[in-house]
Length: 506
Image 1 (cartoon, rainbow, N blue to C red):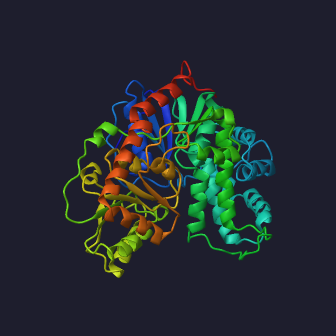
Image 2: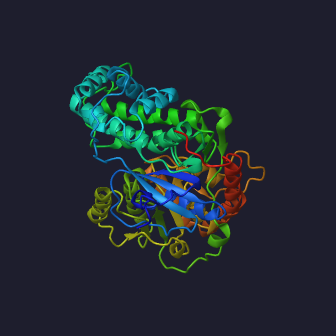
Image 3: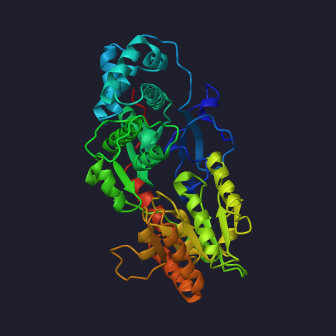
């Protein structure tokens, strides 16, 4: 386990990093595109020192998935499930009604001034209002009931638990120890963005945001898919029915957090231009926006040579989670097997993030009698597999700029992907590309299983097209997505935002 600053001796000086990366639910315990990007970012800047503030739903149950870089000073944890309620039961100097009003507005309106006011009311360490007061006092009950009035058609029990979870998370991120750093860099909005906003207010330092996907959109998708949130309102097809359900409380809260984060940030980075539309819609100032794409070591992946194999091989590479829609990949494999009986379909990636979903995928393979076609590799080094893959397949419901497409493309492997995020831009080329290269694959609508299968089948049946698409994608990755250029862009971003000397402001 890496060193945790919270477990250091009391007399040990707190390390002061150049950059504090604030990451939610990913690095270093969850393997995936964002975690890999964080690991790459730290290693790409050996001249800088980093600390990571890892926001976790609960205590980590596994060792870090990534070897510790030499310039990573420490990792600190914020546990959203921390049930330490505290012992101070007095409300702030302001009335409970005003404090509750601030909390309610932060969950719905996203006003940065209200965040600063709430931080003052919660008080300094040692004199801080307890979470027990905010959740379990008579005044807290009255506050929650008041805000429930705007959603009176929704399940009260569902609202009760949603309110407690959101207020608890808000309390944790506003009261957790804040590492000293010259720059605070949130790797999403959500709780990470809130800590970034808090850092900007509390320290006066510059706060940056890099959004891989639009956090509020991805959470809305997960909320809509969640079976743990009950549907207490049947709106049917009546678009004029504006009654709100518990899902709306969750979704609005994450949108509100995004507004606060955008308003507090000095600069906001998207991976591709289309995502800036969503950022602007949630209040991001256009003068703050820029685009820095993902990048890959095109030289390293370009050295991967095709390995001779007898069976046509397709692969999904990624986390086995609902948002990746691995079930669609399995269905596509079954459809393809009708025309390619010896098809091999690999599902490459970790299966421990959502064990229940992963098991459902295994069950589906068995139910369809596809065990001879579909196999699960678990987490592996993709470099060892790219040479034996004919077509990469990405069936995600939501993506940003998938690193896996860039890695496969750098190795000359074409891709069929759902039309989400920057997939079309990567495979067909950006609109501003002065010298069009040609397609590196094809895109299809989300859930269009037959269309996805037909596109893959076209490439498998036409080796000349398959190789041409692979060559095109390799050229495009080398032109637009080189890791060296991306590292330089982040070096410049940090350089123009550095504070001259770390100093905590009370």
